[in-house]
Amino acid sequence: MWTDTRPAAELPKLFERGGDVISLSGGLPDLDVLPLDAISHQLSRLVRLGGRLALQYTTPHVAKALVPAVADLMAREDGHADADNLIPTSGSQMGLTAVALALGAPGQTILVQTPAYPGATAAFRTAGLDLHAAGEDEHGLDPQQLRSTVRELRAAGRTVRMLYTNPTFQNPTGATLSVPRRAAILAACRELDLLLVEDNPYGLLGFDGATTTLFQALDPEQVVYLGTFSKIFAPGLRSGWIAAPRHLRHDLARVAEIISLSPSALAQGALAAYYSRSGWSELIDRYRDSYRERCALMADALDAELGADSPWRWQRPGGGFYLWLRHRDGADAGPYALAAADRGVSVVPGGHFSIDGEHADGLRLCFSNVPRKKITEAVGRLAGALTEQPSPAGELTAVAG
Image (tube, rainbow, N blue to C red; front, side, top):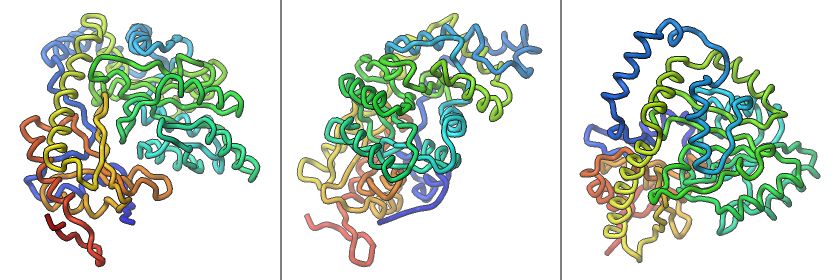
């Protein structure tokens, strides 16, 4: 199996060779939709009138002016935002690290929905947690497999406290877990005294505007919810939040304060100012429109270039950033990613999203930030690589026909 030990931030560089590279690897939002003039005016006003506060250290709380903006976002997916239980973060990555350090201990086991966001697995490993894949069936996370896995691990003497999931437009697959399945998973978690960690960067980015009820909405005391402004506003502000169960708020807030000392008052002020003047609906709709169009262009190009007889299969996601290809015969996708790089298009092989070598037959394609006029060309280059096959020596050779 193709493997690579590079840090997550460096891996895409391996697949971006030369100057004429079209990147389908990095999960970047399309910031062309941002109303930069309005944001610039609001930031200027914020600094001019309140710069001594906005540029100073602040208390480790979600700013009072920002709470309605968080509550609005969570309510769109039926979630609950209690100001007393909101903890500021510099995005989901800090939230994941805080959860791992505050709620786990070295040597304990966390169950992980796989394929998994590499930033999450890195945070858990950094905290000394052992990772174990959570079982799935054709509908996603499987509550029966969850029960059997936890019981087997505990019978073997391992401490299992948490289940991590990215349930809506998952990175990297684009899949969404249904509400009935979420309810069944939560029922199993309650039986097993298992805390569920819900990481939700993409939930509001459904192409048709539809949303899926959060795990947190179904049981706020069983779920640690991680939210971020990176995908519905901009990642450069580095701002997000944890919606914590009441009994865990203190532990999570203490560790979050150790990590960051203070949230950015400037970032929180900028977000609050934007929300108070514009709300979220128009901007979120712009993002949805952009990603719907890009995803359709990519999926249509895959259909045209590869066709129904291809050894690669995929499904059109209903939202988010990603399209997930898998080889029907389980072939290692790493050499195909390298071949694509030689043709001037970068993708990320599925092994990068594994915790123990699984999903090596996958490729993640990100459509969110690719120029529209480049998508068809990128897929054409990729298709040229995907219609080759590894030779016994590990190199790629063309498939006849």
